Length: 169
Image (tube, rainbow, N blue to C red; front, top):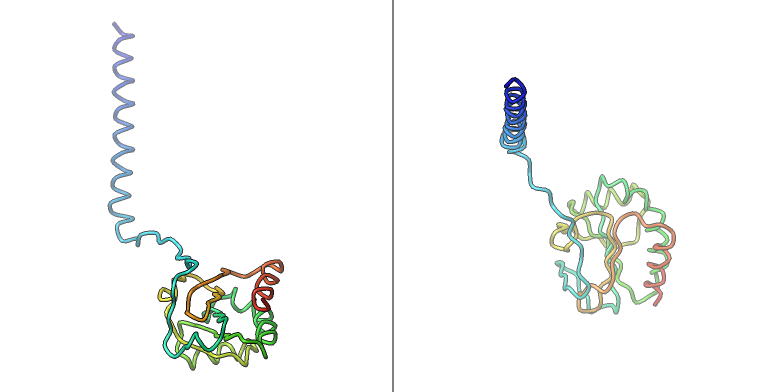
């Protein structure tokens, strides 16, 4: 009879432990993580989607390229030399190259100036209105404002070459 009693006692102990673990898990989830915002997925531009920004006339150029940046984005700052080369390459081409930042225009201009990025139009727009959730992002748009290509993040040399190829095509 003692073996049966030991098995019953061990089963009861296991059930008590499992119940305690489940109860603790429920309490942690309910009270510790109750105020946490839901995890958001990154917004990625869709090829063919149309984008509009105030004071940008896409029909002026056959190709429009947006450098979507943000003050405080270390990847944007680290990519400054690439952007300078891109601006220089775009000169004299039928390309409308615009820096788009979520900050006010004056603050954005100061940030770009601090990076040595000059000779580019600046527009203010919230990232979500561009279907973008992170910076840096480069958007290529046609003369109707439709996305034809994009790159996200700090680009490795091979992808920088793709951007230059797209600019020159």
